[in-house]
Length: 179
Image (cartoon, rainbow, N blue to C red; front, top):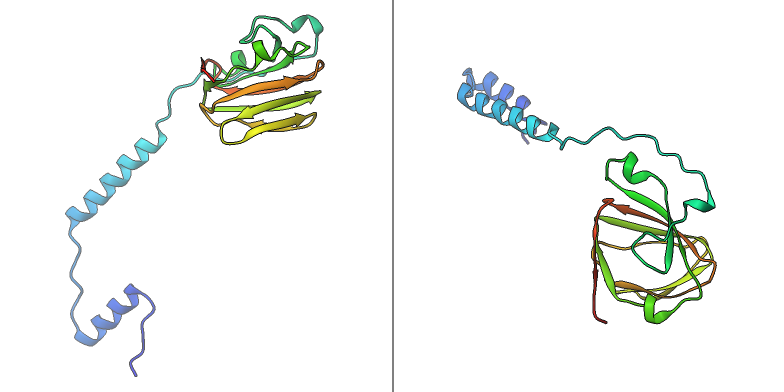
């Protein structure tokens, strides 16, 4: 039985010893093409869009920082300074939904044109509807993500609800839909 070689270089050496001839030399043109391809790939991989340097954002709780200047009239928002510090990469805020809940005003199907959205319930509870998920009761300590452009709405909430919301990018479009 013939002995099997373990690698290509071992096989080439074995052939050289038996035949007494040298293996064919590789074309230098082939080597040049390969090295140019590697160099081009390396340059492409290192190019990233220019982004301004991020800053530290520190936000301490102050009641006067809750403003009724956000997306929804029935909510007050406390901006955490993330949008300014990240040059628009992300935004984060604490949301207080104002009670009592009025479904005629609150329960409107919509979506956000975002790359990422996460909500965490700091206090109270909120009942949501998300397309493909249905109705879900979120309690204090609950968190969820909403995929980009998922249709959703708030159905109900406690009078004391507070939410932490993180969204990428900081600027985005919201589209209201007919239920």
